[in-house]
Amino acid sequence: MASHYVTSADVPVQGERLSSPTVSKIKMISGATSVVLTLVSLFLLFGPNDGWSACYSYSWLFAVFFFFTLAVGGVFWTLLHNVSNSGWGTSVRRVMENLGSVYPWLFIFVLPLGCPEVQKWLYEWMNIHREGLAHEGVGAFDGFLAGFYGSDSLKTWLNENHHGLLANKLWYMNLFAWYVRFAFYFIGLSLVIRGLRRLSVAQDSDPNPGTSRLFRARFHSTYTLIIFAITITFAGFDWLMGLSYTWFSTMWGVYLFAGAALNSMAVIIITCALLQRAGYMKRVVTPEHYHIKGKLLLAFTIFWAYISFSQFFLIWYANITEETEYFLIRNTEGWNTGMIALVFLHFVVPFVVLLQAWLKKKPVALAAVAVYTLAMHVLDHYLITIPERSVSLMNLLPEQFGHVTTTVPGAFWGDILAFVTVGSGFLFFYLRALGQNNLYPNQDPRILESANVSN
Image (cartoon, rainbow, N blue to C red; front, top):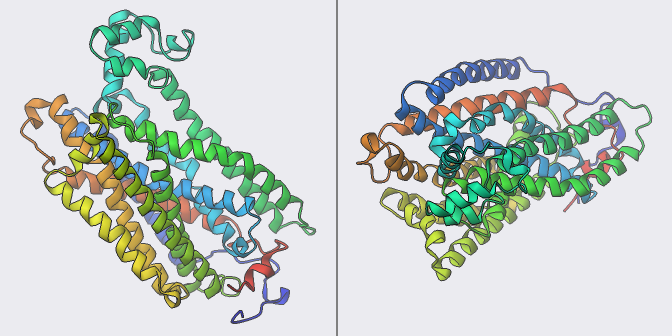
């Protein structure tokens, strides 16, 4: 049975708005911090020192994709709520939407990845393509007219210069197609979340809200799940897997999805706990909601571990050189400690803790686990991106980094700077979204069903 019973008299007619001087101050500080540090970051990325630019490009990619997974996860939970016609999630749907609404703004931070000055440090295959295009006198976008996969002359040049693997992948890995996908990732999913959030918010001020918007949201969330799947999968291919064009994994897109779903739910849990601590959403979000969210956190912890092990196991028993290089690099010296830590700290610890039913009904305790999960997500993405840095820089800048084996001295501070820069911007846009509208859809026909949920 539910611990309390909510009636329509308990739900404010005008809803609840986030109006807090403390939140406004945090938003202002985070926004100002992001602006200042972004200027510093642009100097590091595009400045005269090649060593700084090369190192910081990897720091920037690490930070950008980490927060990308949180925002895209917010879009996923919004879509899933609508498609599944979820009743329990109505009380927290607006939090999902607000988290997802940060996604379009992340383009500001992703934009440097589209600049050749940054790409030359991250993506070796682009350097090879540009060299080939310059040698053959072929424009970067001529490949579209030649069949979308690159010109015949470029393919011939790649084969003649012993880049047969790149020649075979030219249908996907060519500059024109990369930029088309780059634009699609943000145009497509940004339109999706903006449209769904607009439908949801319009219901708050409608004197006769009805159910028409719910049916429209459900319909538009069906086919747009495909856009979400394409975005999280192929952005991971282009931005992360592309760091080493010889490497491939059939589990990569699912692996990134598992981490995004898990840790965006962690953000939703933390947000609800903090809002309730500040006095909001007291009547519509109950321990039952935390119990459900805790079970989802546990489910995706198990799912992430399953996919992670499956990826490792498939690569291990196939023993293909192009596949094993990923784990060979990360099983070297200090990186190996981090990989072992992921097994126990990212899976075993939260798995054992989240098995406790009582804990999942305690907002503070569950929020603490969510914070811990996010910390493990940081480690996960650090190990995805940063180990590639030393390998690449030894080849690109041998005079400066030729002696480096696994890490680049001093680069860790750049990793922190990039993380704080993108993180403060993410926080600014998230708090901005939370304060723009009601914290929950108070006129949704299912709000009472959600407030009185029992599981």
